[in-house]
Image 1 (cartoon, rainbow, N blue to C red):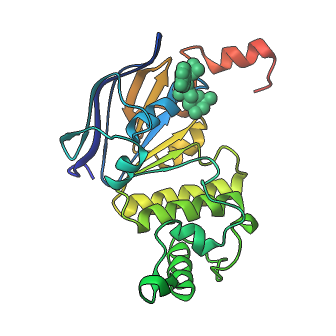
Image 2: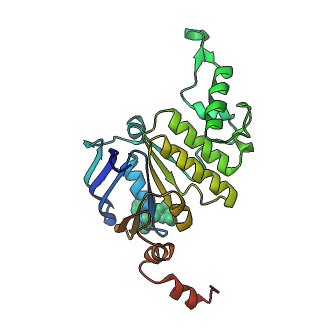
Image 3: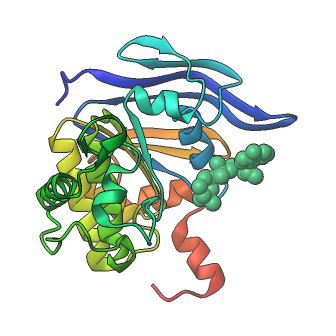
Length: 262
Ligand SMILES: Nc1ncnc2c1ncn2[C@@H]1O[C@H](COP(=O)(O)OP(=O)(O)OP(=O)(O)O)[C@@H](O)[C@H]1O
Ligand SMILES: [Mg+2]
């Protein structure tokens, strides 16, 4: 998808909190139908960077462009309306809500008129179950079930299906697989591929190199708030990426120091 359009671009973005400079001259872009993996160790600035893209923080300097035009979001809601969806580690869904309520939170289909308007549960259930199943969660057949009964991977998938249904163009996933086991992670990775296939620009944050390599087209490594490397799938090995994330120190040397058996 090399001729695909750049959807979101950051140019020379800096972010400081008072005297603390967290992000330094960030240049990044993501295209439609592409997965950009943002890698970096704890504290590297990954969450700050995506919050800056998602309207939570305003950049201290630099520019954010959408479809080539500079944008400035007044808050997360404005970014959402522009098509930027953020899904956090636990999917951001509420355990005590039904699947369809959670799917439609705030934008439920209604039937009736004026004061007689009521939540159209049947229609909401049909749509939510259909959309979630389309994302491969075929175990779900009842929209009235509580989100709390879903696995972590299914909750992530529900949040992603919801973002896609409501027209997101940029999907930002902050460590979606961090709390998941092998099978559930594989499921979330499949769904990331499905979002990509549907033409979304996906930004996938992780510090699990294997997960990044499984879905990424393009990778950026963040070290102490700056982009230390920016490369494409196939240009670096797993070991090289792990070494980069460890701040240039060889993982093999680190493991030898702490006595980890290879
Ligand atoms: N509101 C804030 N005020 C001051 N410093 C902040 C603020 N938010 C983040 N920071 C600092 O910015 C740095 C980067 O934090 P950030 O949460 O972006 O890292 P991260 O890469 O997401 O880490 P992790 O992998 O642990 O989630 C940290 O040193 C953090 O203390
Ligand atoms: Mg973080």
